[in-house]
Image (cartoon, rainbow, N blue to C red; front, side, top):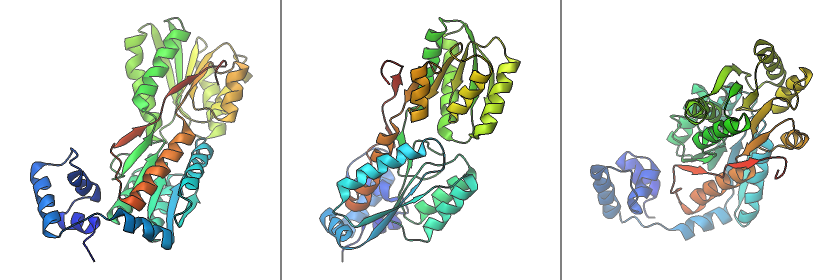
Length: 336
């Protein structure tokens, strides 16, 4: 039996993806490490046999895990992963879904997967050190991980699939400037629960003075992705800042934020920008309560993440990009 890609990686003391980069002459590997890996490949006569691996996935049963915490994005992401499974019906891969309620539960779930011999994991990670550590343990156990919708630092994942968060934050800043005709006050509704949300807010705050210097950020509040807390924090923000002209919502709980705006008698008066196109958001855009939303194609994110995972599991095909972006689409009442 020939040596495997993973065995070459272990001998070289590198990740499997590094060996793949050398085999396919991709950048990102030092010259010294590249020469060492090539020598190992030659010494051990490594030959990739994707057909044999694909046949193995047809004959034997394997399990992939999809971990989607209970946030607003989860249903659409799940639909996308299920769509992709239809393309791989001939392979004996069972997909198990997990829906942790918070960071501690997600970290515990990921740690448990290390001992369950799963073949790969797609996860929407909550921004937490315990979650990042659990993802690193999966990587150390040679279990491939693809993050979807939100990324996380120091997780050793195979790649990330989702929005270009910097672009989406800058897009929101430009839209706010246009909606306010270049001047006014904006409040930010945000959260620290997801890395993606932090990135959007940072890009918005950094770019707004450049593209609309007369639009001022009055205040930002953290709603912790909790519906009732989101309502309370929004109501309090509006009371403290009666001169607000707009709200920028970087995260979930959009219906609860809009409920607070409505109860303050400001529905249709404040310009509101948010993200994604859940049914509830679609209704709010159509009613005019939300000015526009920036969609990151959640179903496509789920589909792409699952495809990249399956292709890695079955064919040893490592994603060519570290970050795979879906399209940012601006949706108004006229095109949602």
